[in-house]
Image (cartoon, rainbow, N blue to C red; front, top):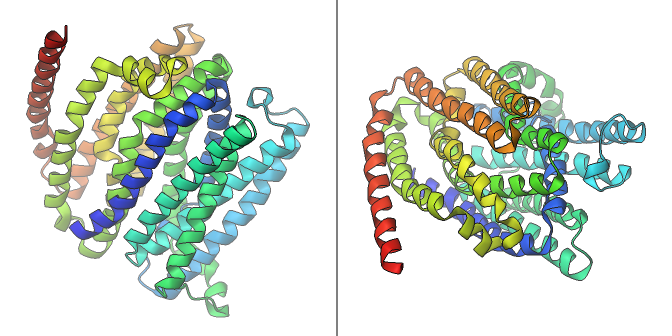
Length: 443
């Protein structure tokens, strides 16, 4: 399993480094308002793309028969293309009739519709191929695909801004090309490793049958994924209503920066744990799970304390003075992000346990509450920061609740997560003392 973690984590780590080092350049070239336009389109496409396959791509990994897995893969690709066409038609018609608000997006109707439908389809197809490779333990190939994607995205976004103009088109075109590059690389990996899905009349004719057999993913995983992605991305859409695009852009950058560690850990751990849970059983991986959580606390806590001390200075240093306000926003986001870091990759364990209904209930309740808390805060005139604090507090409670329930349902020792609290406290105290000592010496 350690080797698989390394293979899965390598590309995720490198891709995160590419994104991390390119983002300061992008932030200095593009304005917060332009970045907000990109964030709004990506949020909409992300929500739609995540559920385009109705989460049947998860069944690719859990299917015992290769032909069944192939049937599900082809079904997911067909769904992705059909949903992409429906999304384009719907957004084009609604925008033409002025039934959806799009003035703040700074894109014409046709381009707005094209980017949303294209990116949604690419997200869906990319996810399908990722799970096919996960089934065949091609963790390293999936990992490198992330590097290819982030490199392509950053290169096109920067070249467009420098050679043409720093408009939303550069950011969106870069994202679309990055997703496409990852798809092409994963296809190449499938051909190279000769893990090509079966394509025959028998396989195609059994698509509906296989999907019916795995309908639990439609019934439980699809709403769960929808509420999860809506919780994260609909925040941008709500903020667009109440806040200037400048502030929305600051939030979008802060959210992206603060979630870099979560994305890195998730890309490395989730596919490996999903495959290990499916093949070895949930109980067999408890020791590895506890060790991972311990090391996450050891590594993350000093970073959390350091950030709380120097948030504004860090954003000014890396992204420029126009992004300084994003530092204070990040101080609020860091608490749900840290707790999410510990539980984000555990959702596959609940899938293997057949607890999709429970996870759906939890996700529905807390996602709705988090968005409602943000919306009510704005409607009551509490302002941006206080409304965001309400939302983040609800998300922290959700992450802790999910952790406790996951341990209970898996049959793990529920005391283990709480034993990490003294460790986190000691690390926090030591890091704070070190920072204070060095601050005194510097002054």
